[in-house]
Length: 173
Image (cartoon, rainbow, N blue to C red):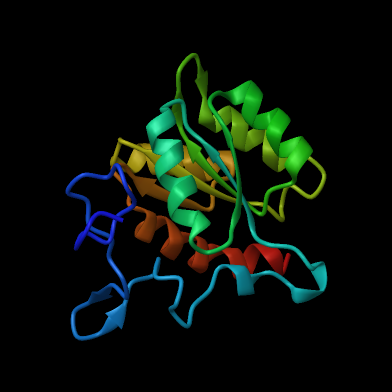
């Protein structure tokens, strides 16, 4: 690591936060040393890690979430369009799908509807992502089967909090 930066070689000027806190010592949701853990949210009898599918046509957005969730030991998979999302979901059986609603050439709403129509479609948690904050977009997402709606830009901390909020009710279904 370059001296004093806490960053791997090649990351000029980058700093790595350790034991990040918000306010007066309260740990951030994405701090893997926190008492909260996405990994612990699954039924231990399943003997596997949480699996999250990231669907976004913007590769940098996918990479940001994949990298952030990796610090939890979460298994991630990714898709860049609707057809790939359906195929990856069928193959990987994710617990959570993080779904951009406006994919190039297709609609994330169609993906949500198809995922819900499948066997065990009620067990997957679907979190919609969109740059649109209007109520009509939220309503469309809910009608298509999305559990939560996050407005872009969305941080990994916000995504983790959303997963923590919705996953218990979905895995109990």
